[in-house]
Amino acid sequence: MKKKLLFISVLLHSIICFSQVLNINIEAHKFNIDKNEALIISQIEHIENYTNITSAYNAISITLNKKDYLFTALPEQLTYTNSYTVTDPETATNYTLYFTALPLIAITSENTIVDEPKVYANFYYADDEQVLTSKIGIEIRGGISQYYPKKTYDLEFWEDELGEETHNVYFGDLRSDDDWIIDALYNEPLRLRSYTANKLWLEIHTPTYLDEEPDAKSGADVNYVEVFLNGSYNGVYNLSEQVDKKQLELKSYKDNLRGELFKGVGRGASTFTDLPNYDNSTDLWSGYEVKYPKADDIIDWSNIYGFTDFVMNSTEADFKTNIWNSFNNDNYIDYFIFLNLIRATDNTGKNIYIAKYTTDEPYFYVPWDLDGCFGTIWDGSNENITNDILTNGFMSRVLELNPDNIADDISNRWFTLRQDLLSNETLLQSISDRYNFLKSNNIYEREALVYSNYNFSEDDLSYTLTWLENRLTYLDTYFEKVLSVQDTSLETKKLNIYPNPAKNRLNISNNIKLNGKTFKIYNNIGQLSSEGIIDNNAITIEDLQSGLYFLNIESITYKFIKN
Image (cartoon, rainbow, N blue to C red):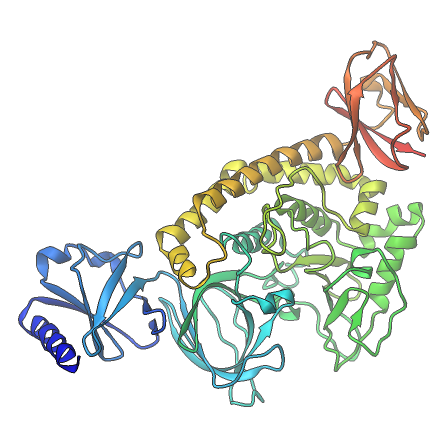
């Protein structure tokens, strides 16, 4: 065997020495090798220049860490869309080589990485602009996702091995900071939902206090990276900014409470379904976790408790008069639209932040953890539901009482966004382009080498696009016919619905007969509750539960209350 390896080594050396050989030298940290998977992933400068290789060369080699690997077949050109077999002359081992257009991250640690505390590790990053090496602290992040084979990690950039001091780093066009997340995307069938949703929210909504804080963002921005951990390829990740005081540019704590930030981690006050007493000695309360101010400075639940109490228990008149003093109405509109566009079922109370810029400013929402959306749920399985509306207790009360005619504002905002950013063409093309990039650059192929939970097929793409088209169709109807509500006594329609409130029957009075016309009744979250044919200018509603409803007749919608 040793003679055979020696012969191969001599033969390859002879080829390299006596042929016209193209040698590509890759600098340190711009490649990574997984020996168990016999996999090499490398960046390369100006890959578009490596063309017509067969006409100019007899062989091609790549140098990684001063070691040459020989291509077993001479390619016509080098691309991100192909893979190549290269041989290690010393061991005659074949490796599959991919060139990547994405940044590369390598993390090595002699410590066991756990869910707290952070442990010391070494970090290496490379993209077209920089090569970065640093000490870091690393821990596993998440709940159920901690048990997935592909983990999400929280990183803090350290000056020393104990983490006594930190330093800021930047990646591409993301912010400069010492605290980062690499999100595994393991339960996301196409590895693009979370990326798309995070980018989309930043386009839909900007902080309303940008004049005071021009660097503030409305959420976390993300970039794709490929990650190696202790020499093993871990796949594609989202490198993500944190949602924190710095990202939102909240006012700092200075011996008194100003900016506030709470993370939704469950149900309760966070969904406006419960209002237990709070305890300022703990950083957890009824579905919320304090994120700012830091618990070492102060824990004060009084403001968020007061807001929750107001939403749940104020009179109708008080709520309608004062709600937009307590919560930012522009943020409510954009978040309600965003939540329902992507149908993020976990983001009505959990996986959501509620924040306050400063004491005298209203609260606002920030989304987080957006992998279960666009037709999937938290575990990555498809949930092909397109005809519902997501709310929590706060959102529902706004829809029910319609303060300052917010329903029309939501409807108008939706159709304004639909003209460009949320048009079918823009949204579908964005998802298709992202899928095609990941597929054509062999990122799905590499992901499947180490994880077999999804096959990343075009059927998955077709499902996503079909789901989105159906969702958009439903929401167009909802925002036009349910939220764009006409006054029930509108004289121009010469239509009067009575009694209102009603118990068993709605009578319809106008100057023409409506017998035989169809009607639809929607509840206050847009679900179809009843439909049928108008008989003798009347509609039976005795089977409806008590609440606010919207009656639609010939594309005109009227509001009524069922007692």
